[in-house]
Every structure is written in C-alpha cells, then in structure tokens.
Amino acid sequence: MRNLRTLQRSVVITCVLSMFGAATMIGADESFADLVARLQKEKGQFAERQQKMLAERYDLSDRPAKGVTMTRGKPVQEGVRVKLPEGMTWEKLAEMTPEEIKEKDLWPKGFLPLPHPHHEAGGMIHPKFLLDELKKQTDRDLTRFDLDHDFDKHQHLLAEFPAPIFLTTRPDLGDVSKGQLVTLSNFEELFKDILNPKQLEGLRLLVTPFPQQQFNATLDRRTVKASQGVSCFDCHANGHTTAATHTVGDIRPDSHRHRIDTPSLRGVNIQRLFGSQRALKSVEDFTEFEQRAAYFDGIPADATKKGTNILERGSQVHFMAEFQNILDFPPAPKLNLLGKLNPAKASESEKRGQELFFGKAQCATCHTPPYYTDNQMHNLKVERFFKEVTVNGRKASADGPIKTFPLRGIKDSPPYLHDDRCLTLEDTVEFFNLVLELKLTKEEKADLVAFLRAL
Image (cartoon, rainbow, N blue to C red):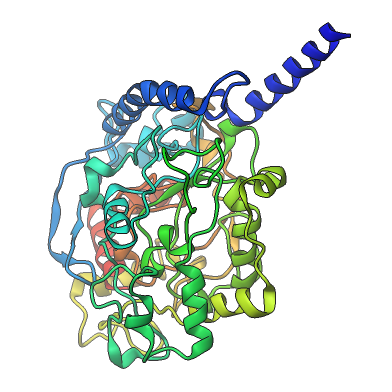
C-alpha cells in the first residue's frame, strides 16, 4: 500500500511538472531557500540562451530615425532589424511562393514566434526601468530572482517611459501624467481635480497591487521577499505599455503558449474585443477576467491558494473600466476629423503611403479609420512559410486568429505584433509584405512607414 501511494504521488508530480514546466516548480523535498539557489544558478544559462537567439535574429543596435520621436521625445528606431538568411534579399524573398520559402527553409528567424525570456518557466516579467521606478516610489520590488527581461540591454527598442496620459474627457490638458509614473503614491495628487470620485476610485484600484502567480506571499513565488502582488498599471504603465511580457494562460502545453506583449490601453473605449485571442467582449469582462484567471495562468486552484482578488462588478470593475475608457490616443496633428491625412500638413511620402495603405498594401482591409481597427480577428496563417520548429522552449507552429490592434499612435508602441517579434515599423511592413504577398517596392515600403508614423 505504501509503495502504491508513493507511485501515485510520483505520477501526480510528474504530470504537474509536465504541464507547467519543471523549472517553475518547487520540488517535493525542496525548501524555498533551495529553490531560490537552484533557479539563480540556472538564471545565467537561460539569459545567455535568449540573448544569443535575439542576436541571431535581429540587428539590436541603437539607430534612431532622424527627426522622428515618440510623443514625449524618445527617438523612434529605424530600419529593418530582422536578419535574412545568408545570400537572400527582401526582394528575392518576396518573389518566392510560401511553399518555396518553407521548402528551402528561408523564412527569416525573426519572423518566427518570439519565445518568452525563459519560455519553460514563463510568467510575468517587467523591464528594469519600471522595477527601479516602482521601488523608488512605492518600495515594492518586482524583481524576479530567476530571470530578467530580455530587452533590458536594448531599451532603445521599447516604448518611452513613463508614457504620457491623454484623456478623452480633458483633451485640453495634454499629458496629465506630468511626466510621472502613476502609482499609489501619487495618483490622487495628479488626478483629484480632473476625475470624478468614481473614476478616481477606479484608478486607485488600477494602481493597487493584488496577488499574482509569480508575485504573492506563498513559497511558490518568484521574489525573494513575500510580495503584495502586482497592479494592472504595473504592466499597463500609465495606461500604455512597457513591453512587460508573459505567456498566455489559455494555451497548453507550455511549448505552444504565446509570449504576449502588454498592449496599450489607449483607445479601449472604441475597441470591442479584448485579449489577443480570447475575444472578451468588454473592458469590464477583461478587467475581471485578468485578476480571476490570467493572473494565475488560468489555474483556479493557484488563484485560491495565492490570494485571488474577487472584484465586485458594480462597485469595482465598473469603476476601473470608467477610467480605462477615458484613456485616449496621443495627438496626431496631421490627421483630419475622419482619421486621414490633412494634405496641407502631410509630406509627399506620407501621402503616397496613405494611398498604398488604402490600396496596394491592403492594410485598410483590417485597419479601418479613424482608429485603424475593424474590431475583428484574423488568421494570417503564417505557418505556410516555415516548418514547425522549437526554439528556446517555444514551438513555432500555427498561431491561429489574432485580434486587429488599433494603429493610432503606433509609433509609440514598439515592438510589434502580439509577441514583439517585429522590432520596428519597417520590420512590420516587411512581415506583411511577405505574408500578404504584396510585392511592394523599396520606395513603397518607405512611404508606408512614413504614413504609419503619422498615425
């Protein structure tokens, strides 16, 4: 009987490790101190593996575009960063069929799904500049002992920080963040004269930390000290993005789980789908879903154990949504009331790019003005171009349908696609040129980028 119980226990442990990755679990006879020591010992090898993969896929250099900045002045990076196979050019590749590219294994590695910084372990991870500011303001430390964000050494490729905040209700004020990261320490001072009491309470909840899978008070956490958890605005900093990343909770096994970039909350008032693939129908649904399920990788037992925050729909979820729904896109001075270029303000390149956007490039099929989304999901079937392969724990296979993200303010939100695989707008144009088989010329691609920057 004792041997049977031992066998049953072994089978259960094996199944759990198989489901969630051995690197993420505390062993049956392992203390928390031993877990920390083990994962810290392994940390360097996984970081090196990820950096090697990034360097193989991309040109990671700091090459700002001349005279092009994000809203608060951070330079926008220019140029195609995805590396091609030796001897190949973008023009040659665009002349080939998807079948030829797949057969000859010529699909650029940078266009394969991007793995999580440590895909087998997964979990929420924030860039260092956010960690430093949160610790400075709130004395909370979200530093994971087992891994760092893979773009910490390449921050020039990420969105500006802190991001400005624009409100649909007070466009006359411009950036209401005043250049600060909004946290529990300063939210009331910044917003008490701008928001009504209901909106202010919603913002308070958005900057209040609650337990999460990796950040909590149990021994199955990834911070050395017991943690209060994370807030919505730890990832969606100032209602925007810092490229904080995670692996989605709705896919198994782990090797198929998507790395997910934290999307901007700007303009959620005009969106009707939430979650890259979950297709939740309101920001209220998404807000509640995140803390009940996504915070805990879709594992109800973990949520119960680690301290899930059961938000009350009427007095909490709706308050949070009221604030989220007034987060606006940044100003676009070259656009008219219908979201298209004002010819008097646009350059010739931008005007040619707009014509391409609505014509040959087919972008407007999904990205319709004025906000450049159709509030639908589309399956690009990128798997037509490559053979299934596993890289750093992530199996590159079919992604399935992904929601159409708005393109308004797009230059403020690098990197691109749902998993950050495209570092620049030029990369993104090359990606869609191949996927949609557009055969754009070099000049047409440059004009299209110029138009996208004007949005």
